Length: 91
Image 1 (cartoon, rainbow, N blue to C red):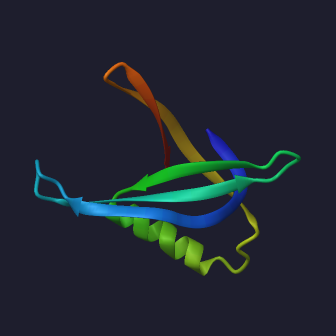
Image 2 (cartoon, rainbow, N blue to C red; image 1 turned 135 degrees about the vertical axis):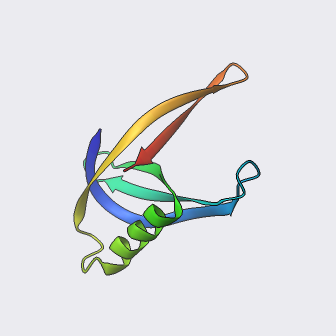
């Protein structure tokens, strides 16, 4: 799936060390605003140290922060104790 909107920036960042593998991990949450009569917002995740840094460098290097960008992402739902939770991950 893809959406064209205005990237507002990183709204949350989490990192740590995997208990299973001992490797470092990082997940950043970003916000994109889709303009229109009824403005929409999508909060999506970027996972992995390298990919998170690429997104940060891209955003920091944008000359016009109000220029629309095309973002491609996957939407998935996970079940936990009989309830479903959506996950939106950019790639």
